[in-house]
Structures are given as structure tokens and as C-alpha cells.
Image (cartoon, rainbow, N blue to C red; front, side, top):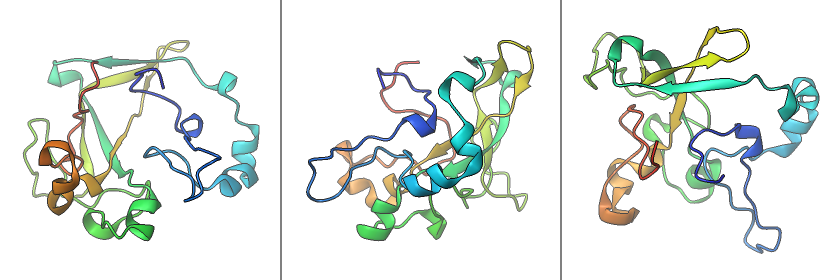
Length: 167
């Protein structure tokens, strides 16, 4: 993906046709091609039809976007390898962690899966501010952090904090 942290998810599938153990997917790549191909809306969607969008990152918290956070663990992790997600949610379902505020504090207001994206998205052609969301793979948190480089758990805090990607 050429070190681009933002990419149309439908175009992100990574697989090796010579892999005898099955296909490998970079989370959160689409994994069920039949569902994608047979969906009428997806059949008519082409990359050239996507809007031109600017994603603006800012330290000005007054401009941050309140958003939902979805689970991006691929079913390979939780179904085939037995690594549970937080709350046992499935790929692209709303994360079931308590919502957090702009400073990362738990809100304790009974809501789940809400957070803040440190910026906003603008449709370049219309100037309209767009809804935005992000995802994290909660398999890479908590008890599973031992399998990660450095043993540091990531993916379970509802905070937009990409690892080594330079934004």
C-alpha cells in the first residue's frame, strides 16, 4: 500500500495464490469475495467513482471527529487460530469497549465503541465535512500482547494511534 495509512478497504486484499495453507490477509482486508461480488451495490462501485477526500490530522481537539471504532480482526485470528477479540465481536462490528473522550478517558456513560479521530475528512469537490471511522484489531491487545514485537499490546484502547506509520 506504499506506506499510505489510508486506503479503500475493498482494494486492500493481500493474498498469495501459491500459499498451500490458505490465503493470508492483512487486517482489515475483505475476506469474503463472494459476498462482495454478489452484493449489487458493490458490483457497481469502481475506484474511479470514489469521492476525492482530504483527511486532515490536527492537534486542535476542537476539530476532531467523534466517531465509532470497529473491530478489524480478521476471522482467521478468532475463528481459525483461537485468538479472541475484546467482547468477542466479529470483523467490522462495533467495538464493545466503553467509549472514550478526546483525552482518552473512559466516559462511563453507558455507550460503547465511540472515540475521536484526531482530525476530519473533507469531500474535496463539495467542501462537505464527512463522517469518518477507524478500526483496530483487538486481538493485538491484553493477553495476546506477548506474541507481539516488544510485547506491547496495541489495538484495544479505542485511540487512533497507528504504530510506526509516519503521518
